[in-house]
Length: 502
Ligand code: HEM
Image (cartoon, rainbow, N blue to C red; front, side, top):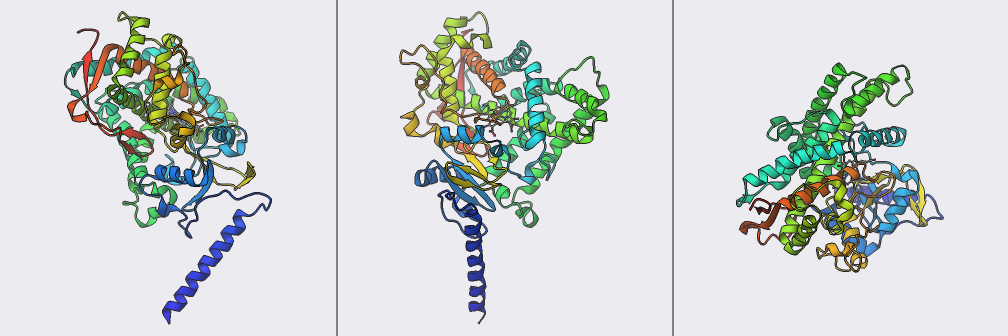
């Protein structure tokens, strides 16, 4: 008797769910519904995602086309796998520039502060302010170049000390150096590379996030797991590192507040706090009071992490790829030697004269695609896009990996071939709109200029000074990756030979 009753209840629930989802998706009768795989009640297509969601997204692109929808837990996600459509959706309509509200992952739980997680006026005002200040304190300035070179020279010294022996853990070494050059702009402070505080902040946080996301990001899509299995779902680990970060950044902001001198603004934190002082009597200002200070803490966290692991992983890819493809390494060294000889280090001013290096950098950004699923946006209103209905709160996710490896665009995407970014005679660098490593449009990476300058300086100066080859233990590295939020190469080691002081 029990079985038919349970069956009836289940059937009724399914029917209600089905009718409800039809009703919701057909809210606007004139618009088409995006194609996509049929999911199950409650979990949607979550069970089909596996450990590496991007692989499944790519399979669905082949099946359903350049834009389709999929339901991941409670989230309707629109996946866009075409560069022109990405440009259009992220550039034109401001409604598509929101961020999904992943409450558990903010430095202040359930709040959406900082740059990466905020939206609307708060985001616009702070993004504009950040861009202006970073330009004044760093981007495109020789002071910034000096700071980058200082850290880089420490890294080169470490490589030199290991000359002839296998150099391992390259990504970690780079992460520490890159956190430091950022931290001097933000807080006018520098850590020793073996400072335990730095190691804890720089390495633990990214590693924890990557581990959670490598596990299929279940906590993002089924957040109520935190109440049932807080340990296993990764909730405790995520909140643990976020709380540590919050404590550290809050302490640094407190110290800056104590020492603030408005006629001697030392760094980004000082400039921000001076703005907060100015807004003291203006309760309507986005820089008013303690809420603005919390916004500052969240922004520092965003920059610390968005800025260091991304750049470090890209350089780590470079050292692997140029060791694996020695012809490209030799061509790059020839170009560097022609421009600078061995008498001076390469400077950002040399960039326009180095077409091959520019092509190498674009090809590395394409081939590594360190953020394969991009950073998702949220539709802040019901919208039409190419005749399709995109409901409010839909997540818009660019499939950068598919875009960067689409044979229709690149011909031979699996080959590492910097020449694809050169003119036919090989003399001129040619940019491509199909390369979207920093995404495009209203929320495009604010650190792109800094990242490109840093990558240029690291890659050219490392290969000016050293030749690298894969160590015997890594000879057969097949470019396998660890997939978390960041797509990094699996561990490898290289042998470095000093070219300048043989
Ligand atoms: C190779 C290096 C880097 C890559 C590939 C990269 C990639 C990205 C991508 C794909 C986005 C998402 C854009 C969007 O949502 O439309 C993004 C956003 C962002 N990036 Fe980067 N990034 C890099 C370096 C940096 C650096 C050095 C910084 C900081 C100094 C930085 C700070 C940010 C911030 C704050 C955002 C959020 C922008 C917003 O929401 O308005 N990134 N980045």
